[in-house]
Length: 585
Image (cartoon, rainbow, N blue to C red; front, top):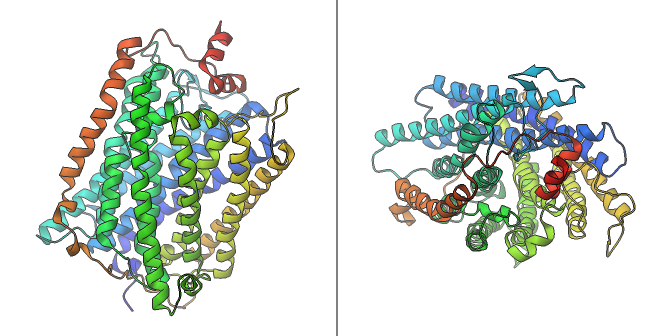
């Protein structure tokens, strides 16, 4: 049996385990906040007052979609680069440096968020220590500067992680001249090119505008400009969360199926398409924003539709790989081969169910992307439904299922409770079906998102089928099942880490693709070319809109001062700036 990853690369395995530990801690906190939200907004049971709901909502977003996903990403990508290049980083101290910065940054941002639970938060850096600004942190809502400092430090750590992986690849290239980039490393490098390019928007927004504003270095900022810079980053980050799942689908899932990846070249094309298409589309999140010309919004809509292509290619390639594996296991017939797949393996079943939910979420994403249909669901509960099918299942469920295969490779310990693990991934799938069914249907009748009080006195939503009571019951039930599933996963991981029995762990060697890298042109590995084209597309998509916004209202806006963060403030802001103006006057 080939040696496990922990035997071959013990120093790197410690780093990956540290990243996973940070990811799972954030996951546990975020899951707890999720069940509190589900019970609160359905009015089944209220653990907190409504003004604290926005602290919970902010924490749920930041701990899950930033800390959980990205810590898992850096751990998985460190494993992928090390294992596929068969060498460690150039300097392991640099590797621990970027992990340390990410940990410090998330801790600072987390402290700023959690301080919102205090009745009288302390004064830090000139203002109360709180950050009830939600994941999107739109101005004029303002958090304590510590929150923005934490985000900045976290981003710096993430950038350094990407630089570390490029340094490792450059060293490998010098040792292996003329060799094609191994597929997993190719996926890591293209993901980081996408991240380097797309995160520029939020870096500028935080460091140039929002942080100085929160420190009172500048008196005002331009809300539309910072909002647009956020969504310059905001849609790319969705694929930053998803591409680690793609890596597992393309490399580990075929092995679990009993076969091999169908096409290495198609996998490379998919990741290149994400580099090119993921960033120039962020304005489709701003269809309702005044100040952005309809023509720019139409261009963003058109560009967004092209993102269906890599998703369709992925569906074809991954399903073909699964079919190949099933037929190697004796599967026959047009559809009967599905029965030959290893459905009793929690790692396989979790990834397969995550992929199925992702496919459905792609169709709901087409609704979000269309300008005319988006007007119906904008800022409604439909949007969190879409987010929970994509990031909350396609990514999260894949990460959990993937952990059932990767963590034993990192620890040398057998997975504990395989049957419970299988129950856990199926339970997550059932929970997400209940919860998102409620969210999608409620969103279609206008139930708002991001508010502690979705049901207004003297007003009833016109639910065509069922009732608001039934929708609330489904949401609460789904949230409860998801929370139970999350706790089961964390328990299984803890028991596996401390499992010391002598039963051998499954071999972690990944087989080569049926169609390997030699079947594709070398231009696919020309990362400079793809970065150059992606940069050009971003300039074409954003230069004119950003220039128009800055010329209309100025770089720092027109005396836009901080708005007090309270339940009323957040609700008014989410329903439109006209309410904010009315409240201020």
